[in-house]
Amino acid sequence: MSFSRNRWLVLIAVLLAFIPIVVDMTILHIAVPSLTLALGASGTEILWIIDIYPLMMAGLLVPMGTLADRVGYRRMLLVGLAVFVAASVGAAFSPTAGALIAARALLALGASMVMPAILAIIRQTFEDDRERGIALGLWGTVSSAGAALGPLAGGLLLEHFWWGSVFLINVPIMLVVWPLAFVSVPHRAPQGRGNWTIGQALLLIAGLIATVYAVKSGFKPGASPALAVASALIGLTLLAAFALQQVRASAPMLDLTLFARPAISMGMVIALVVSGALAGVELTIAQELQFVVGRSPLEAGIFMLPLVIASAIGGPLAGYSVGLFGLRAVAAGSLAAAAASLAGLGLSDFHDPGLGVVALMVLLGLALSLGLTASSIAIMGSAPVEKAGAAGALESTGYELGAGLGITFFGVLLASSYGSAFLVPESLAGSVPESAGHSIGEAMIAADRIGGAGGEVLAEAARLAFSSAHQTVLLIAAGLIAILAVAVPVALRGYRETGASPAVH
Image (cartoon, rainbow, N blue to C red; front, side):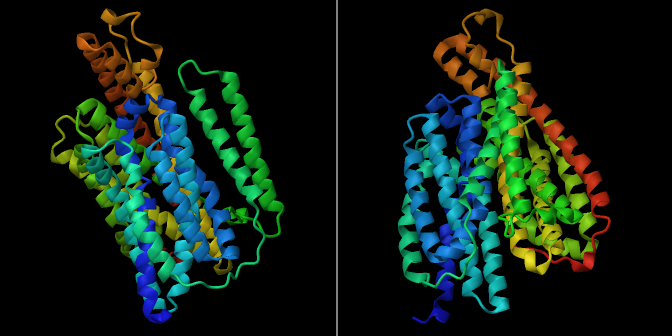
């Protein structure tokens, strides 16, 4: 078969390779209650299990993209898929929370090798502009649809299997995808000649993890202020050293001079806040539905479908909307709508949601998706042509970092609010472990150990505290996004609408 006629098979292969990676970004949110109880994980461990994946990817995407230029995209894709499937098996059978965190970090390594290679292979395979546009559009659809399917897939698996099935499902998929990619993706000589600086990537990852650890540990009940401050200083020092290296380097891994353009800076802020809000809200609502309302994982996944489906279809609408109303109006309007829907959800009763909650979740999904696409237009529309690759890497890193930091912010705020609202029932004074006040998951573990009427009393106290914390978190998030909605038109006042063109996701 000729390469020309084989190009659509190549596209099928790389899109199939992309599905488990994007699904893994959201599938675990539904599994949190199940694995919390199974592994006896603390609230802090749960946050690390979830956000080690996007945080590691945020640091690795750029260096892995550079490495793929040097060693070849096909080789990087196949090795990355092998790492990903091995890590999936390790995650599925992790005996402890620490082992699962390590497996998730390895999953991020494999995913960060695959993602840049997929885009490069698509661009390299389709030389015709129209066909390339179709191929990239299909890639964007798979990206959105995969995120939308994550919670539902997780719910379906947990309805019949144990929590490890959300990882083990990757194995049969890869048994089909890897041979297909091996046969269909052609070998091409590597074109890249740049230096590959893994040391800079490690510096970035270490700085991010130390800084996030400081945030997590600093707000925990009974936290050590000295440890939190020391972690923060180490993390910020490493990040400053990374930034200094980029400024001094003749060929930096991340071109930080792009931040001098206001539209790019604000686009990054929007990407961070919106992707963080989407990840954090999804995680918070998933726990509310299962721990408090008592829905099964499948029911929780179905309940959240309006949010994720709306976010999947919002992207294509953004380009049309920007053409009609302009970037500033769409960016500010989408953020304002997201703030309003978050506030509405914060004041809603999930026990008896009705169509009002469904409408609010649809509005939130559409608004956040429009906001993400607006950030892409701001970044890619303002970057010089010769630096479009650097801008694209910066944008992707912003999404992953935003998801990780969003989960951290929401998780820390949720834990702090929960701890303040949690009251040990008088009938159980002295018999409830201190950890029950750290997270609802730990409270449920304690309630299960106590058992009987006492266990149910403790569980109900935890549910009341979590509902109060859930409301507080969503209202605070609404306020922050509302502030950003006001700041966007000011920051983008010099943006030239005629120069923007939508970027494909």
